[in-house]
Length: 356
Image 1 (tube, rainbow, N blue to C red):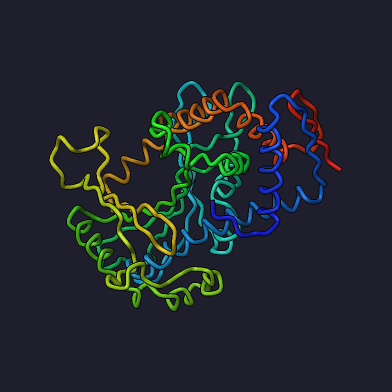
Image 2: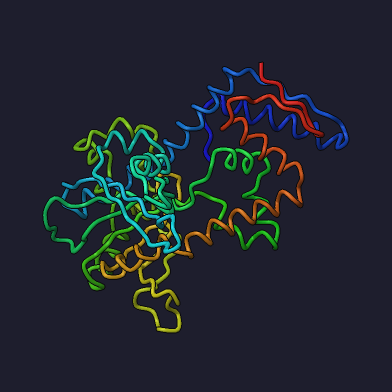
């Protein structure tokens, strides 16, 4: 997480001090006292911090769409899940959204707000739908010359606020890198900002990927954002090249070819794409270039067991961390209450939490 708000630094510093106090005296009972108005300010500051990170994703998606979709496109929010009955049949709901909505609501809230308008009839009762995944489509208003059918943007591992803060407090990213056992879970820790470029066919995929590698900063600059009213939203974005000797707009760190590679190297699921990790404006993004036919196959799987197992493995990793580091579990529970509950004061064996 990139934390810039002073109130967030103050909050993290306070919790870090209490954590250090408990680590220094494991058997002692610690008093944690927080003003209610401070908690409200922290909640709002974290929400805005997440929005800013996702805004960079949407900004890059807009810049690429302005080039690959000839400038004119619509935004559609898509939510995917499985019906809450024994059939577990998948559903997909699509709704056109305004740009202001995209920029001012977190990715996961956008999907959940859409689902709040729907209910499913089960056993004579109307029950809510459950979200498996959500993403935003950038759909061209007319056929385009590039061979691109659409773009999508997605935060691939949305996390609840209390998980984000606890991971930050205990340096989970660094722990995962150092610990051989937990290294296998590294992809379940970080938010993954993903952009998918869906092309009409395989040949178009190869051409578009080469076009991305050759994009210059003169092409992918701030002026392109003015046509979408986004120039003011991108004031903190660095549009300068990472390497002055290589003035590419996107700094490619790695590319894996699951499109034209040998059959034994293909994904067993049948998923096909050119998959790259790029650095842009000091943030990492995953960019996939995928044929349209394979894109539709992937949609069918997004509500299925593979996506749910991803979340289960991620939750299992945190549960194991809580067992190995009891303080991690304590602060995770504490932060969940601070962010989610109305009545916040409580007492346990390790601490008294007092909300003033």
